[in-house]
Image (cartoon, rainbow, N blue to C red):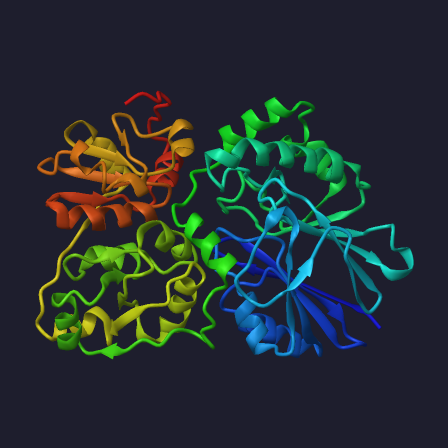
Length: 467
């Protein structure tokens, strides 16, 4: 008889979910599954266990919950959700409250109410059955991260102070009273907007966090609240929608969404008849070299999930241009994770087929950081990074417009002036230039490498935050 414990990492949204079970009894539980949930079914099969329990630590804001989808695939598994803090759900489930216990072979799982990130938030203590009061680990959800803690402002200004106070109490009165040896298994890693500057490691210990986690160093509530709100990263505007979708219960898809394969002429007709928003997921260089006029470039790396959430309306179908047709499944997975399930079709054969059909395309130039530095005085330079990134240093004479604010602030820029756009690596800048090009910015360049390349090249850095 042995413990089965697997961490499933979802890049891009930086989500961590867990499969815990016992390979002798052949049972397992999944905690906080993502929407494309076949990974849990396949992992359980490889380990020789059946998924019988599906737990949610809280109502998620950053991704579509895969609990209902996984439940349909792992029937007769059941979904277990928190009924603390007044939480309500629109789907069939089992209620969990503080102190409830579950056993998987020799492992005891105990639910603990840890509000602050959300009112209903639960964490799950892990212990051996014969040492029930001596926990060896905790699934901390979004309450405690490596080097950080869950943000308390997701429910709006009306609830922020109360949640921040609860978060302070959760950290002081619960986590800091756990023994140093207890291992922490959080719901997110570095890069998630659910916490400020989450550490790169996927797990930690109470002892390490007690000593080094800044969120655990405060002894008064107000100082903690000030710090928590000051350091919180910008909140993606799709978060409130995700909360509603996950509380109601996401639609069960039975797999990835279906999408029609459209040859170039049919794809062109779909664009002209406005059957969907045109999204090109190719790399920044491929997009810059030639793309269909009006396309929004969201390159198909894992962070597409987050930036689709920032930039697209999930109610509007998507017309896709891919790097190659074989990458379709991967791209659909990235879209599904943040609720994008409506597709009007994809361009069969990609831009090669489009060009072969004789249809026109647009280009966006690519400018090196060295050329940007040489031409600084003659260019309109736009920095589309987050406010915190901007404050740490930027290109001299640059103007800061956070990418999600670009469309509504476009009037602050001169479309007639040659313009270079940069971000951290060039990814977000390519999104920005694809928005600007159709709006009259004829001379617009993306800067590949962007701020990372600028720093490594040893070019001048301005830390003046005024514009």
